[in-house]
Length: 341
Image 1: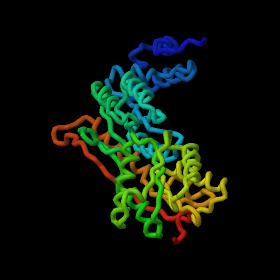
Image 2: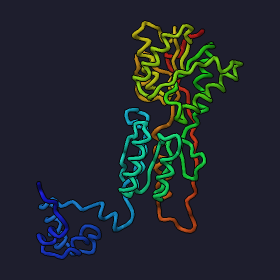
Image 3: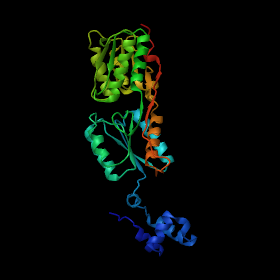
């Protein structure tokens, strides 16, 4: 196994002190041109890479930001990560992206890893509905910002979308098209986003003079295409099948669409479908999918900016104030819901 090259090896090869090598790396302007060139030549020849973890321990500040999301298989969270990475890079930081897979146990393990690595801060979309993981992580004193979740009952910053308004947009659109019997493919009921979108759906039904029994809920254990196909199969087995379905995200909606296509059920003529997130695949589906758009890239960037602001050296004139940013969703209408009843 090759031995790692240390700063002492570089100093020996260049014929200078360890302090001179350190100055070349951290304060090159303080070193004579000829000496600096000799040290840089030794670094290149030996393949020396400085220990970032050691540097962070000395400085007491990390150049890494943690990002823990529910599902990196969902393009929505890829866009969130893209926005966060862009903001972090502009500040000279990197992003460590981790995936909880909607599992509270895995979430707890990654939060422990972030604490061990002494990251600058964490952007977190919680998987644990009880809040216990957040409480345990808070003890480490590492700042964090909630993403795609309102910071209810906490003092931390958060960036989210008004999911109640988003659910109302989706169902109001379906009701306006004449649908009176709807299904909600909801995903795991423990997720706040799932509950909020259902609340909005019920509000839209109430506005139209329809009761909650007009919305039949089909929960799923996951928020992926396979779970959507399973929900579609259950939908096909209903004796009194709804004429429209609202799905808690686009992956579920694409799964429902696949199930309908396989069974020869026409979309939107036999069943109208509305998704949520407006991922790239929504517009590219065999039947382009109507969806509630979330500004995912903006969400990630704003969350990273809030975390950067909180972890800057604070002066007395500008103390950081925790904020809850709530963005507004937008309905993007495509062919999957354009049948008149």
